[in-house]
Length: 141
Image (tube, rainbow, N blue to C red; front, side):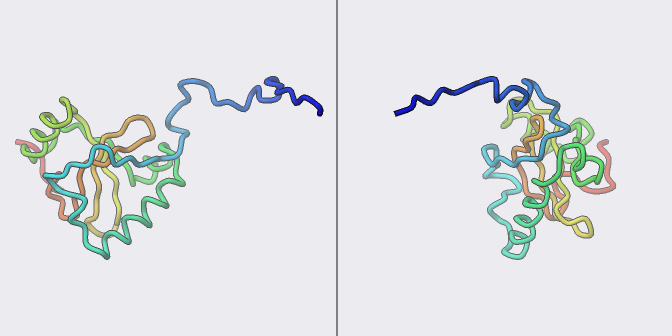
């Protein structure tokens, strides 16, 4: 029987460099940070759930840079949030987290997800179909 030897040199250049720029990586979604007490994802309607899954599937085809350029994803400083309750929950439950990423699920409507962005991964936190987490057109006073 012939012995098979693995030649590592054939793989050179095929392994991504450590610390690759996350702007060029496709979006990924994680559900390890979902808040079960505020703006719960499990309260989603069947119609919205179908729409959400279709949009997340589409978003995973986008790189971080593409999602930002098309304005389906934005990073927000919670110091600017008019909802003090959301700011307090984020700070208390999420180890002082002071920023959120917003995903626009339905551009012509109100469906949005908020999460914590770490590189190209979005850790889903809140479902916000009625703009309660961050009311549109309002600023913090």
